[in-house]
Amino acid sequence: MKITFFSTQPYDKEFFNRYNDSFGFNLEFFETSLTTQTVSLANGAQVVCVFVNDKVDAKVIEKLALEKVSIIALRCAGFNNVDLEAAKQFGIKVCRVPAYSPEAVAEHAVAMILTLNRKTHKAYNRVREQNFSLNGLLGFDLHGKTVGVIGTGNIGKAFCHIMLGFGCKVLAFDIIANKDLDAAGVKFLPLIDILQQADVLSLHCPLNNQTRHIISSETIPMLKKGVMLINTSRGGLIDTAAVIDALKKGLIGSLGIDVYEQEEKLFFRDLSASIIEDDTIQRLMSFPNVLVTAHQAFFTNEALTQIALTTLKNINELLKEGNLSVQAALLV
Ligand code: NAD
Image 1 (tube, rainbow, N blue to C red):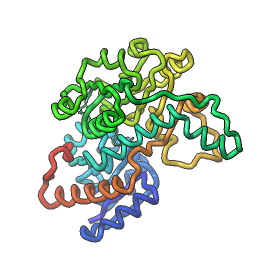
Image 2: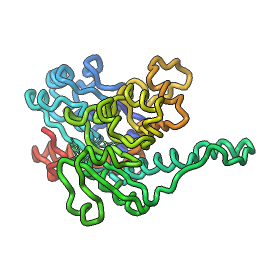
Image 3: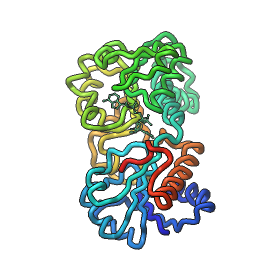
């Protein structure tokens, strides 16, 4: 049974090959992303395995059905890039890895906060040039600050616990309040209160029609002046042009993003010798108070192990039983 992988990196091959022994699937890896032009690479495969920036729209799904692909296995948690209705229509099952290591992403969000606040990236370069001055490196105590969290699922929950450990006041908004977090000291409030009160605001909700541009020219005026904004979820949660405007005006004090609206043209590639045509990311990277990482929040040994094991297990269960033991992993 052949599985065709799209958008693969060397680490994907390493981890999937390592854990495939007990499954014995035939794994075929391609660096290219899945598009209408590349669908034919799935010829002879019953399963395609895709990642965050493969746009699996209705046209791609129709072509996958013609190739007799019966399963689309996402090796990630988010699924905003797949047209689930179309998959249903063509009888293709779609599965994902709902929680591989929420801590990996939550810890990366915290790394972004600490870097932006204490400017360790600048200090690292400074001391290497024998500049031991502290001017410009002034930060603030996180202890006692108000941290706003939007989305308290697996990742948001792990993030809340870390911030409680730092001694922060943690406020959260989710369409479903989490009783355990409430008991742990997280206060659930309406979105507008979170926006108004947070010193640090971290986004952990999925990208969908309700959350697209949750940070926009309409909501930015509600934010505390100088707020630190962190997005490790999906680029589309932020209206990037509005955020750039707010950074210029000092309304947003600092920004940490691991995801970007137009990331599929940039991230996961070495473009160091290329001319980047995207002026928006170039403008973002020119701010001294903006930190961009290239969708690396998930990138830990533990997470890659879980991603490989769960994806292979999902495929195995779907092929053998037509269903999954973990319901949250089955999308269609
Ligand atoms: P999850 O499904 O466990 O949690 C999402 C939470 O968001 C849920 O509690 C849900 O109720 C809430 N939510 C849904 N709609 C909302 C809304 N309109 N307003 C507020 N809350 C809302 O998902 P998760 O595993 O915690 O992942 C969250 C997101 O993180 C994923 O959707 C994905 O986009 C992103 N992610 C990023 C990386 C990375 O490497 N940067 C890795 C994994 C996941």
